Image (cartoon, rainbow, N blue to C red; front, side, top):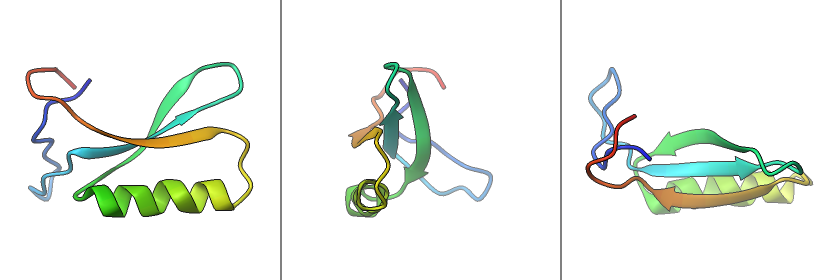
Length: 66
């Protein structure tokens, strides 16, 4: 898991993740987003495009390392 206040080179806080799980159970981070709504729109768009993988949104947690 990642720390709650994830900073990028631009200094933006991006605590919301879109995660993809493939048919073999492997999980991958698709992207980081500033708001839950923004992340959910990305996940929903990927689902609508007919991808067979599972997509969901989760918030990073405090105290974990990248």
